[in-house]
Length: 196
Length: 100
Image (tube, rainbow over all chains, first blue to last red; front, side, top):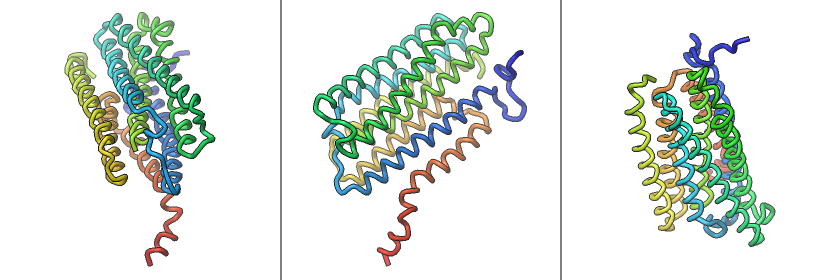
C-alpha cells in the first residue's frame, strides 16, 4: 500500500503530511521545554539567592558549543538545498558535517559534565544545578536523537534518493526542521543558564 | 520552492549565519559588563529572541510557510506564554493584596 501525501500536498492543509506532523510534534516540544522554562522562572524568582552561571559553568566552552550548533544548522539547511539542486554528493558532505558537529557538541558537553562531577557538583547540590542538568540533559538527549535520525539519512536511508528523490528531499527537510528546533532551544538555554 | 530560487536562498543562509555569529558575540559581551539583573535579563532575552526568530524564519522557512503551520504556531505561542505566566498568575491575589 502506498502512503499518501509524502510528496504531493493535501488540498485542505496545503502541505505534505510529514511537514504537518513535524510541526505538530515541534509544537508539543515547545510545551515540553516551555514547562521547564516556567519551572526555572518560578524557582529562580522564589529563591532568596541565585548563583551567576559563571560560578559553576564554563562560558568559553558553552560559547564554542553555541557556534558549533549554529554552524550545524547551516550545514543542515545546505544539505537540503544540495538535494534541491540535485547534488547528492554535496548533500553527503553537508549532512556528514552536520552529524560531526552534533558529535562535537556532545563531546564538549561530556567534558563540561565531567568537570562538574569532578568538582562534586551534582543535581542534588542546589536548585541551580538541578535545573542546569535537567535542561541541558534533555537538550543533549534531543541532540542524540537528531544524530541518530541524520545518520540514518546519511547512510542506509539515503538509498531512497535513487528511486524517490522528491520524497527523500522532503525527509531531509523534516529532519532539518527538528535539528533547527534543537539549535533554537540552545540559543535560549545558553544565555539563560550560563550568562545570567 | 523553485529550483532557480535556491541559489538566492543559499546566500541568505550564509548572511543569517554571519548575523547569528555576531549576535552570539554580542550576547557574551553583554554578560561581561555585569549589568543589573533586570537589564541583563531583558537584553539577553531580546538578543536570543532575535536569533531564534532568524533561525525560525530562514532555516525553518517560516517566512514563506503555509497558513496551516502559522495557525498551529499561533496556538503554540499562546499556550507557551500561558505556561510562562502561570507561576505569576498563581500569586496574583497575594500581589494585589500587598499593593493595596
